[in-house]
Image 1 (cartoon, rainbow, N blue to C red):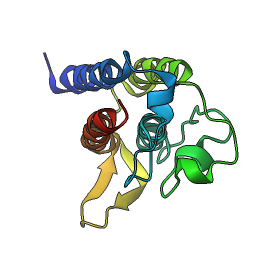
Image 2: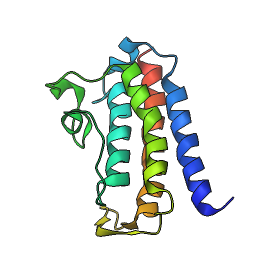
Image 3: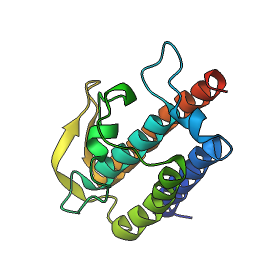
Length: 157
């Protein structure tokens, strides 16, 4: 297996783990914001989808595919208490997440070393310059939010 295949396999495994973490929860658990938290499980799932879409397609000339209003619901610095629109259901979110990784592989296969027009520098100083670098970082980001989901599940049971 080469590095390209490994990266796309990792994306798929990580996404499967994300979905498995929420398959058995109820809609009310997904919507619950426990005391002391700003967000719920549904927000974390939507944010994972939103960020992955931005990391995969937002820095290259490829169209992003997100439902209308997704940035306002799940973008940076958003939270359910400020939602003005109706978010997707948990099942709809799972379906969106399931479709995303295969679409990323389909559209970005063999483009991992392609440079983006405008590299992105994180507050930590890390600069992402290629499609592969963005996708690799997105896996770290997703893992952070999956850990938050696991914590939220304990508080919203």
